[in-house]
Image 1 (tube, rainbow, N blue to C red):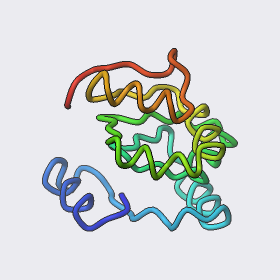
Image 2: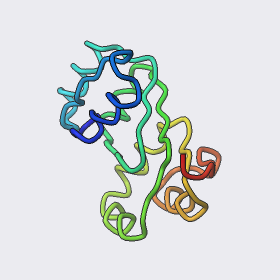
Image 3: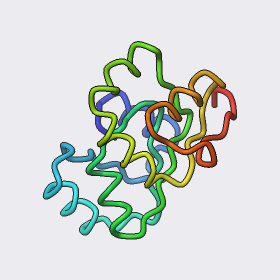
Length: 124
């Protein structure tokens, strides 16, 4: 996770059954060292945590990435549009975007994900 809130959620859900570490800032060198040290088998990104260097680092190491419970408000879409070339490339490295709603799904497509990547599954 990136935040204390995420860390607490992991602790509540899984207790000592899961080791938690904070992800580094989305800087290529830091992300690369993190991925090389911990060697995850899978990356689950929750909601709107769109970190391009993390996605590219996972792609380069063959780590599948899924965006789970994905949501993207109209306001967030407007902000992300400024970075659309970068975010769109990053989104296309993701295996699936599991969107909370049809509107969220469409916004991820507008941002650069392919329609084949995006599935509406509801709020998990």
